[in-house]
Structure formats: structure tokens, C-alpha cells
Length: 425
Image 1 (cartoon, rainbow, N blue to C red):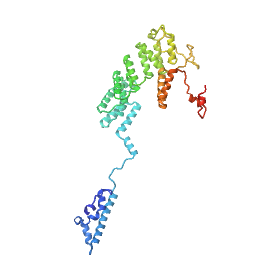
Image 2 (cartoon, rainbow, N blue to C red):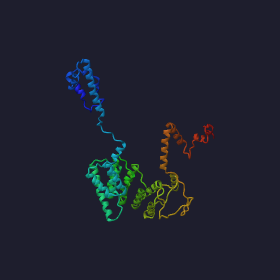
Image 3 (cartoon, one colour):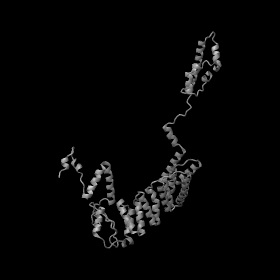
Image 4 (cartoon, rainbow, N blue to C red):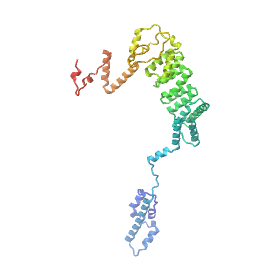
């Protein structure tokens, strides 16, 4: 047993159970002579006369020496476990990884609009088996779907190459089962629109929504502008309805494109709708949109549309209900419109018609949304039953032009609450 214990491998750690067993039970195994090492017998036989106690002590000493030497060897031998990397080293390793280097180079290509270099990097990555993530593919698809920056043959050839390689890259992404995101679908829709296929672009948006990815405004652009460019009014209105269903309101370029399409298609009801949507959401239009509005009022369709007779009181009521500035009763009057560009003075007086601009209130729908939001907030801060009771009281005794909060009035310029001031007549 001494042979086995004194010849322990240096790889044995100090906390090893076997090592602990040896230090606790060495006396019990000393008298098993069949396990003695030969050098122990030689050491003991060199002393004459010798008694059992002396022999016992010498063996213990020899054994302890062997034991201590083994422990020393264990302590002196370096650990074979790998040294943990620092955070700085980990960041450096991630930064220098092939896929990270590729991502950086592709980002630089995107910044410069260098499609040719991006395609070369993509081909090199495929040859070298560098794994591509959704971010790599998104940059490549974005560059492939970008519009041409020139009219010369070289620019057109590069644009056509981008379309061809874009669909190829998209197909490879599907083969490798890389999960797409909103940017992927949007770039794919742009590829379809560049190929003059707005139907495919719209299908991609529908697929995006069905996959649980909320579409953004930019996601609808390729389909909407593609249908408007082709004069497909019903399809464009379908995209517009899908946007409203998804909670994505159209911006000025989208409304301007729909207005122009409606004007050219002589859809007078849609023209009226787009005019008011521009009024409500854009307020101050750009020069391009102003030209679209002017073209409509100068058109033959605008001359023919309108009512010769209308209810004046109904129009006035519409103005009041709408908050001023518009009535919402449709086109009034027939005949040719007088379209001029003018300016306003500091007081809001028009230099053309000499009428003064009036103050307008917020849109009725905005008023309703504001009231709903206020109700929700009040129910969160106050007792819901109390607020509902107050609403019922307003419905029974209202409407009122204004409601004064007496408690807040009573606290004006005071450090203490004045009940007398609240109840004052």
C-alpha cells in the first residue's frame, strides 16, 4: 500500500479524496509488509540493533518524506486547465472573427453604395464557408434593391446585376434557413418593385404580417408607389386599406401619390378624401404636393363635379362640428376653379381674397381619441366608480363649454386648502 500511495501521480490535487485517504489512514497500512517498497527495507536494515519502535518511526519518516515530496511536486506543477479570457480579449476575438470582419466591410459598402464590392465579398465568403447571418443578408439585399444613380450604360448594367443577384441571394437565404426580419422583407419588396412587380411586393408585406412581423411605413412603399405608377387605383387603395388595418398611417409622399392617382382616374370621392387627409395630417404640404393639388383644381373633372344647391345650415353645422376651416359636405358649386398662389400678412389676411384665416379646433376624431385617453388616465388615477359617476352627471346636465376644477381653483396662490374659496358663489 505504501508503494501505491508514495508513487501517486503528480496530477493528483491536494483536495483529491484519494490524497485525503492517505493522510488519514497511513498508520493502519504500515504493517502490511507485502506492500513495502524495496528501498524502505534497505533503509530499515541498515540500523542494527533495531527495535520495533525505531523501525516504525523510520518507516513513518520515510513515508512522510515521500508524501511531502509528492505534495511538493503537485504544488510546483502548473495547472493544465485553460486560463479564462478577459472581456477585452473576448471582444477582440469577436471583432476579429471572419463573420465580424465581413459585416464591417459590408457596412462600409452600404455607406458608400458600392454594390460591386459587396457582391465580391459575398462570393468570397461563400467560397471560404463563412457563415452569414440575417444582418449580412440584409445589407446585401439593401444594396441590390437600391435605385440606379445614373442613366449611362454602366449604371444600368450594375442595376440589372443587382436585381439578378438580389433574387439569387434571397433564394440562398431561404435555402440556408436564415430567419428573416422586417428589413429582409422590405428589401425583398423593393427588389420586386424594381422589377416592376408591385403585386409581389404587396404579397411580401402580407406574408410579413402573417409571420408575426409588424410592417412599417417603408414596407408598404414599394407596393403602394408601384401600383400608383402603373395606374392601378383599386390595388393602391387596397394597399392603403391594409396600412390602416396595420395601424400604419400614410405620410405625405404616399397621400400625394394617391391623390395624383385618384385625380388621373377621375375618382372624385377619393380626391376629396385625400385632400382632407392631407389637411389633417400634413397641414403644410411640399412643393411637389402643392403642384398635384393645383393640377386637380385645373382639371376638367374638378370643373364638372360639385353640387349646385346645398343646405347652408348643414354646411355651417359641419364647420362648427369640424372645429372650423372645413365642412366635410363634399364639393360645393360647379364650374371652373380659380387657382392662384398668394401670401398672408402678419395678421393672417390673404392678399388675394382679402379674407382672414380663422382659428381651427382639432379634428373630431382627434377629440374623441383625446377624450378616450383622458378617461383611461382618470380611471387609473382615481376611483373608477367616481369618475364614471361624474361622466354620467355631465351627460345628464351637459354639454358645457368648459368645466372648472374647483379643488384646483381653491389652491391657487395658497399653501393651505381653502374650503370657503371652493364653495364661494
